[in-house]
Image (cartoon, rainbow, N blue to C red):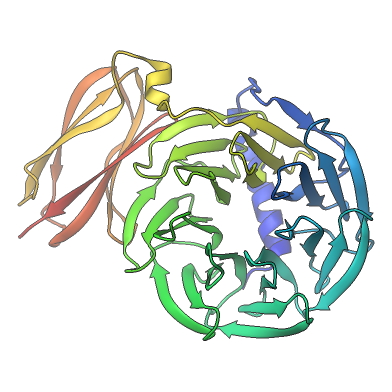
Length: 417
């Protein structure tokens, strides 16, 4: 079992190894300072006029998103703020802390109006879309569901075998998804308090999870440095996105449901296309790991907070793939895998738009790496081919992932015996 404190300390320790890789170019449109310690949590109000932040300095700050000035600052006195969320009507903020208390705050007054004693440390907080319930994850492996208006609860959802690090509702509030240090993701029926589906495939703690806008996919991030995209209904793995140099601490999805935004231990904010998994944009600027990313309701701004004590505001990029931004004449992609289905031997053909160190891996349908075809080898730009012996692979579906710098491309293929 891992506590949130050990999780934070582990990532902070490792993050120093990656600081030298952070770009000096900062494309943020605004940097907010005001917290005196690491900033762990962020949330936009549903009308986009306010941004709330919470951190190690035991405070919640509310920012005007037009002037970017602090208009409220609430002290939690004896505990950091690990999670916070606005109520759907924007009148309240719910915050979670390691002192076992879930607090409800009046936004206009900047005062605490109620609290829920969870008798447990609270890692993650989620508000149901109708504003009637809040869910939290804890270190006793539970999801806790509270009635906000009647102060009844909690209902406990029991099933995980380690800390529950993150919880989220689907669009109508009928389901909750949870990610745990037991490496699994659970989908729950809210009314029946029952497990609907279990998603297995990560190699380490699941610390971020979201549901797509159409309720068809679950997207998860982990300490294993990957993002996985799952079919919500069948539980099958659709895609694994690799190439990260550290844990994926936070995920968000654009209002139109087309883009995934991630923040992680390497200090970068990445924007990807949900349907293809391709990288659209990389934002550098933080000098330490990113704990949370969130998107404004109009989809025009991204906010990120970091161990560097700052909050950064970024412009949501257009849909132009990163390959086209870097070059309008060629792409970085896997061109072909032949034959497909594969019997024993195969040739992988790929194209690089510029010279780069390359990695090419093969993963199975559970996201586990089964072969590394190219391991950090320098390739010139242009079309290249590499032979791949599949005699040790059993019949099934596999994924070939090309990683060249910040560019990641994944293609599915089949082995048939």
